[in-house]
Amino acid sequence: MKKAEHVVSIRQNRTILFSLFSPGSPLSWRSGLAALAFLFTLCATVTATAQTPAYPTKPIRFLVGFAPGGAADYVARVISDPLSKALGQTVIVDNRAGAGSSIAADLAAKAAPDGYTILLASPSSISVNPALNPKLTYSAKDLTPVSKVTASPLVIAVNATSGIESIQDLIEKAKASPGKLNYATSGNGSAPHLAAALFMQTTGVDMMHIPFKGGSLAIQSVAAGDTQLTFGTPPSVLPMVQSGRLKAIGVSWENGTDLVPGVPGMKQAGLPGYSLDFWYGIFVPAGTPRAVIEKLFETIKATMLLPNVKAALAREGTAVSLSESPEAFAAFLHEDAKFWIKLVKDAGANIN
Image (cartoon, rainbow, N blue to C red; front, side):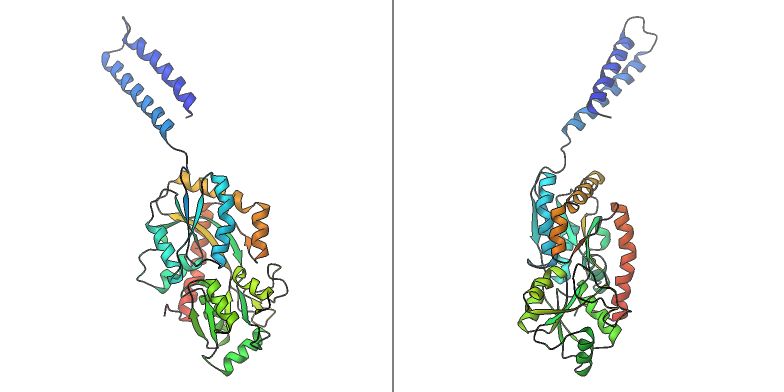
């Protein structure tokens, strides 16, 4: 009921109340007192409605589980400014790197459920880390999904001077020297870590995992020659590819994509059984009011559809991919988790 309608109702009930107490009224004083109690309740409701603050009324913390410069950080910073303008409050990106993004997820899970802490998460935080580490102090149930926001393939890239020109070259070199090739990722339990584990499972090769606290640090190690390859997110990898320091030899989707032009998909590269999709989504602490979740969902949707946001993400090999509703995102996560949990088990991946 709108405030104006409340006022009309109060006036109507006031008239009724006066008639109840007027001389000759056929109703009892007990009926009159009941009407008086109703009127007081109605007045209190109008007052509470008028005093309820509109969300948001203060800055919002946007948690990111990886170091600055990586894909998650890039996506968050592309989103944060237009999101701030749409919400009328500053959205502050807060990088909390470490433990395969578990640190940021744990902070979000334990934050007040009031809409002033939101989390940008990938499959790592929601599905992989709980499957890898039974000692985690949070679970997916502690986070409420708002919307998926992006989707992209991972890019398999090697040091430009490695002599590896294709996926088949990589397989041959890895088989010739088991355990000698080092692959860098954004951390234990990260999607790139699992992508590499799936690659080894599919091809039968053995490579050494070198985890970092963020994608940008992992990419820098490959560019410097300290590690030989990476399964990285496009925003982390493509700048180094464009500068000539890395060579992209494949994307993790079955087919190639215009997001990473000129780079073959895994089917084209000779691995038709390999396919992996990478996404980011936004979450809030469990218990966040429904009205806040709906406000965030609608604002995020409008933000992601802005032409400048879509263009900025596309330049870095990432597509906007939105959920139809928070419930649709939750349903997607339920099915998506089956893939990641099975991958963890089948690949024998661990946090060490």
